[in-house]
Length: 193
Image (tube, rainbow, N blue to C red; front, side, top):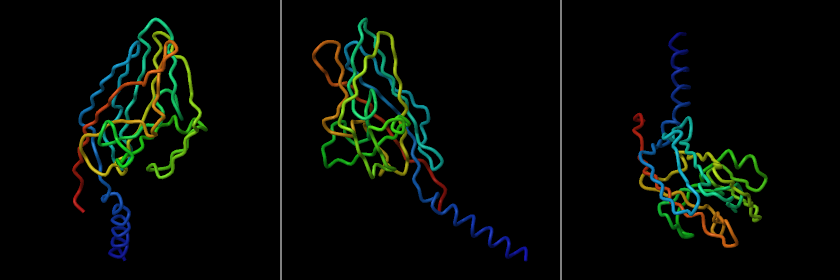
């Protein structure tokens, strides 16, 4: 009887792990931010570098008004960065693979719906324009799920939707929110199957 109980328990344990062991896990090993914004400063902080079975990698983007006047920021979906994705190039074309970065901000708005893995995306085309006052900083958290990545390597954070690039203005002219974030991602070692 004890042998049957042991075999049943062992079989259920292995069956429960079989899906988990097949999923690839990743680690963000390096991150670099390049910014060319007049009167604005942008930074990125890794909250969690590991994209594991249990939880996604997480990063926090911060945008600060370093000038002496308010700056208007216009974006789509969520303010101020919009919907972001990860791509193998800083300037992807329509044939380039992209992975949607998820954000708790997506759930707090009715302007965007993002399904798991980016399988369903819809975006309200109405821009959101708000002022960022002098010395004010706004932060947003974004998450990267390991099972959404097809491979390790160098990836860039890009706008998910063409023509929906966030812009900023301190007068009448609108300029693109010009930044580049590069992530180096490596595959983590897994238990042998």
